[in-house]
Image 1 (spheres, one colour):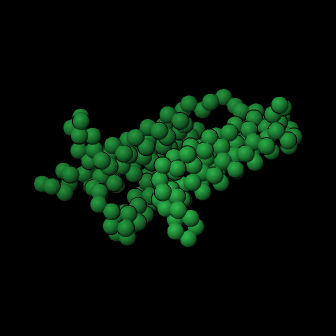
Image 2 (cartoon, helix red, strand yellow; image 1 turned 135 degrees about the horizontal axis):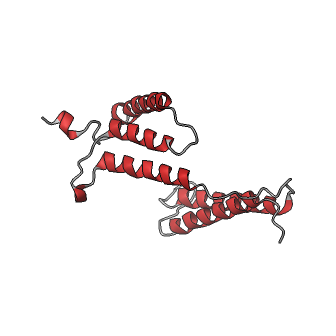
Image 3 (cartoon, helix red, strand yellow; image 1 turned 180 degrees about the vertical axis):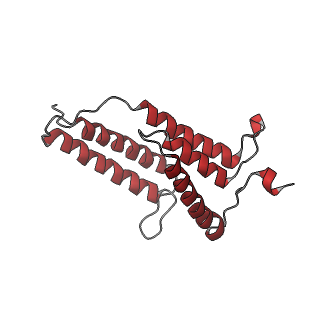
Length: 163
């Protein structure tokens, strides 16, 4: 087997693995049919489509010649660390951590923290851009999730709203 594009080959395998996992997990639910869909119908169809897409990408990686073999570079640890950390901090700020006594801090502060930490993953860092992006995301999130969808989670820290 001669892999002509490493990136496409491993991406296709990843898609196939995720698609098979979703389809397999969907089999535990009622599937139904197209006219009367069960809870497992949609994840089963998406899983199968994702697995087929992965198979096509993997096949293409084995058949279509690329210039340099489309090699996979070294693993980017810094972006991985900061993106995962940003999401964990955001989750902790929205829901709090009762096990360590951290109360929910709220949506707005969580979005600013998420934006600031995630921006550290890149090669360039500009404080003004991060503040503008955080503000835009905070306003849009407030409008979408609190006003339009009426989701019930803290927007501001408890010490701001409860005297």
